[in-house]
Image 1 (tube, rainbow, N blue to C red):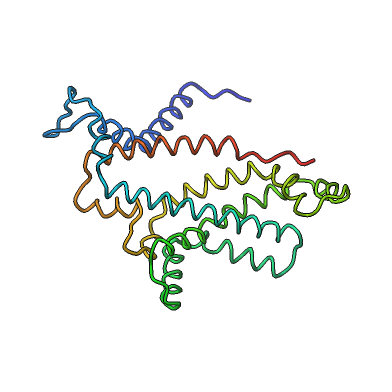
Image 2: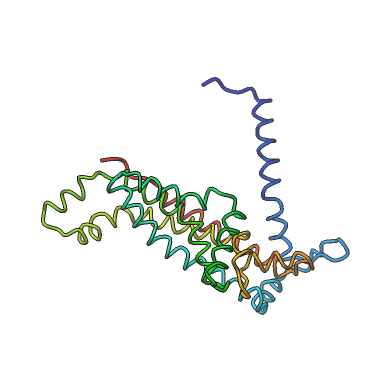
Length: 263
C-alpha cells in the first residue's frame, strides 16, 4: 500500500473531524446544557447541577409518552419476532412463487416512504372501523419493522447447514425438539440483534405514528408537539439519557450481529 502524503492525510482528518462535529455537535450541546444554564445568551459556568434530570422525573407528560413508546416498541418487537421467524422458516423451507410474492409484501412497507405506509394503514383502519389507539400504532410499527426481523433471521438460517436439522431428525428428535434444541440456539444472536434494531426503529418512528395514533402520544410525537413552544431544560436531560441508551443498544447490536461461518 502506497502511503498518502501528510498533507492529504491531514486534509482527510480535517474533513472527517468536520463531518463528526456537524453530525454530533448538536447532541453535545444538548448534553452540555443538561448540566448548565443559559441566561441572556451566556453560559452560567457556576450553575452545574442535576436539576434538569430532577425536573424530568416530575414531567408526567414526557414520562407517559416515554412509557407509551416503550409499550409500543416492546409489543412491535415481540410480534415481529414471532411472525418474522415463522415467515423466514417458511421461505427457507421451500422456494416458490407464492413465497416470493409474500416476501415482496413483507418488504414493501419498509421500502416505501413512511408517509405512504402510514396513509395506507390509516385508510385500512378507517375502512374496517378500527379506532385509532396504541393498538393501531403497534400494528403500524410491526408492519414497518417486520422486514428487518425477517431478513435478519432468514440470513442466519441460510448461513446454517441443513445437515444440522437433518441429523437431529435422523437421531429421533421431533421437529419441535429440533427447533428448540438445535435451530433456536443458533438463531439466538440473530433474534437478539433483530430485536435491538427493530426496537430502535420503532422508538424513532414518527410519520407512521402521526397517522395512526389516537389520543395517547408516543415520545417522538410529544417532542414534535413541543417544538412550537420550545423545549424546557429537562428535555436536554432526556436527550442525554436517550443517547446513552442508544449507545448501549448500538454496542449490543455490534456484539450480536455476526453471522456464523458456513459449516
